[in-house]
Length: 163
Image 1 (tube, rainbow, N blue to C red):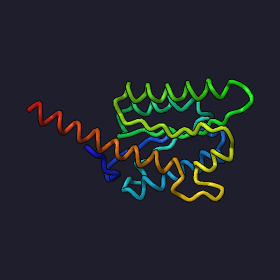
Image 2 (cartoon, one colour; image 1 turned 90 degrees about the vertical axis):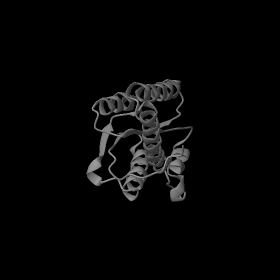
Image 3 (spheres, rainbow, N blue to C red; image 1 turned 120 degrees about the vertical axis):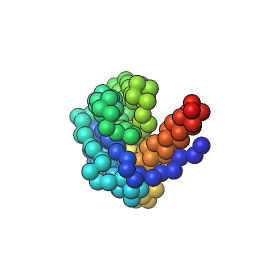
Image 4 (cartoon, rainbow, N blue to C red; image 1 turned 45 degrees about the vertical axis):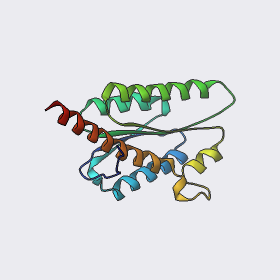
C-alpha cells in the first residue's frame, strides 16, 4: 500500500500552539496551503489555537472523538532553554499525540518542532531564507493525506476479506 495525498472530500483538524507563534504561524500556513492545493475544501479545515504545546494532545483528542475528521495534525514549537522544562514538555507532547492516534484510530500527525534554537525552528518552518520545501507544516499536511488514504485502503481490504 502507498497513500496518495488527495484531499477531495476530506476533513482535517489542526491544533496549533500560540507559544512561539512566529514559528507556528508559518507551520500552519504551510499546512493550510498544502491541504487546499491537494483538494481539501476551505470549510473542511478546522483550526484551534491553544496556549502552548502541552495543550495540543487533549485538543486533538476532543477533535478525534467528535467523529467529524479524517485526520488530525498537531503543530507547535518547543525550543530548548536553560532548564529541564524542554525535556518534560517535549516528551509529554510526543507521548500524548501518539496516544491520541491509538485511542481514536485516526491518522494523527506530529508536527511539533523540538529544536535547540529559535533559528533552527524558523528554518524548519520555512523561514529566514529557507526554501518552501523546508516547511514541516507542509510535510505534516502531506503525511495526513497519505495516511488517510492508507487507512482507507486497509479498510477496503478488511471489508473485502470479510465478505
